[in-house]
Length: 152
Image (cartoon, helix red, strand yellow):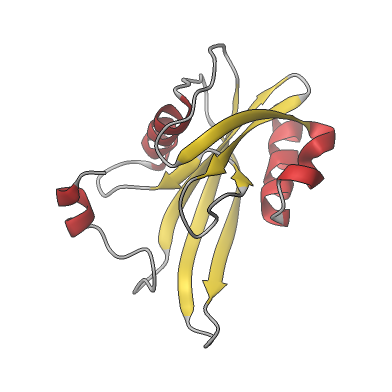
């Protein structure tokens, strides 16, 4: 995001309203693609590739852009997999972060994932590793929905 883009976008911390977040569950046989987050609110944790939708961008356009920025990968068809809300409160109980997240599922079509954007490291997680790496229960739930949807 350029400085001009940041100046026009609402603050992500203590927002006036929820921010639309987009996630992409990329699956290949036996595994899901995860990235390690570079910035708050989930800095250092493993998550799905994704980020905030930009004004004038459809949810699917945002999904493709975020996937490309964070992993360098392109995918074929995107299917709606699920939705989650991430609300983080500060010690005083004020809403510090609020994301309404739309998650899409896609089958991996090839290529090597590389870190970029808000991702410091991509990793293919075996399905049996989800509890170890994907600590947020909503992320694990959406991965399982996508796995059923794509019949993996």
